[in-house]
Length: 147
Image (cartoon, rainbow, N blue to C red):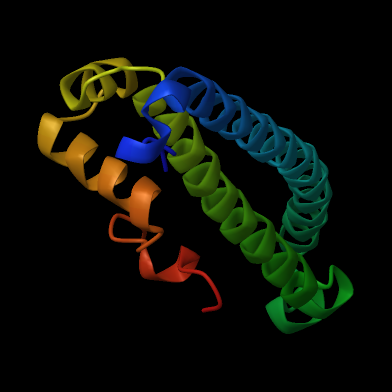
């Protein structure tokens, strides 16, 4: 996304700086969203912990499982936790892509990206491609956009 063309050659450094700064701002927004999601997930996990404790007490009292599940609202807890986990995975992926995109724009190589993130150069290449194209090639099907 560099604005360097032969006609704008003198503007290369300015254009790269603007691109890196906007990439950094996007990364900051994505990390902020991820942090908010982590906080929501923490609350959801605490809520589920209470549900599981109540279910255990019901099992210890030898109540019928169907009654226990209805009384602790297990279905609601399961759906809420699944949704929160899916949100976390989607936002982790999005923030990873924006951070990798910024890292590349700041001059890191694909090998550097792999080393910094702890995955192979081939996986780093796929993430870089995804960051550049938005093609979601590395994501799990459950976290694909609009899906």
